[in-house]
Length: 285
Ligand SMILES: O=C(O)CCC(=O)C(=O)O
Ligand SMILES: [Fe+2]
Image 1: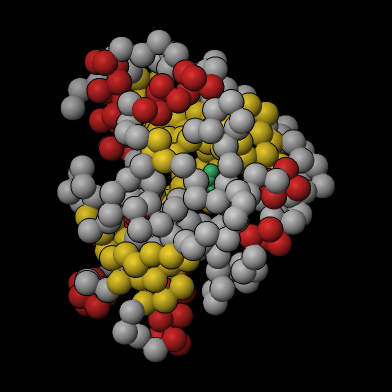
Image 2: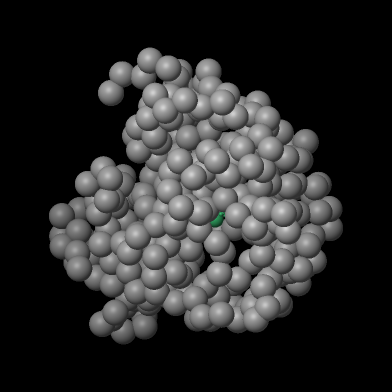
């Protein structure tokens, strides 16, 4: 596709692009169509210097599909579609600071996540993204053969692998503002079974579907599953599959959870405040 209304500046060799020449508060359908194509092509897109009120961000998000509401975190009082991600100096818990794909513990995970920066640290607090098409394509044929048709078991709280804190309130204890957003009752079940190799419903490409929520592989012994999961999590986040985004106030990122893992970097001790909207997705196949 030729891009006529937007300019594109890739941020790495394998995924991610900054889209230029666009004011997201005043978007026409033709420009949106190009943005959508760029999103499918680069898997994560970024915009700089946007000035969006909450309703304008919600309107842009709705162009990609229905809004997804987080199962156990509350959004803003006036705009429940928006979850404010906030970290204050002294907070030790950083939301999303491990490689993952959003809502993988959900039977119908959010297809996309949009993050819009309101306050950013003077340095640090970048976000990394990793291309899961490549993670799949670079596996050997015998390994692809083993992984084909495998199913993962995923949970919202890592009880066996991962963070090791089963109770959500405890997990968020060192970030009181995020802890206060946990819905009551906070301990709603968050479990899912998904294909380890999935097909993207829009691009038709296969990708690896794994992240920090993945606990087990069906049919394998625990140590077999652990070994494979460890290998795949390392492989799927190899530096050459990734890009890294430096936030500025007014930056907006939109990533495709069907083919991208991401992680927040916990390398700062200043206030950082983002407005996050997730878009509903379908059952992976
Ligand atoms: O704050 C970030 O950079 C990303 C956090 C995250 O994982 C998310 O918003 O889904
Ligand atoms: Fe995330």
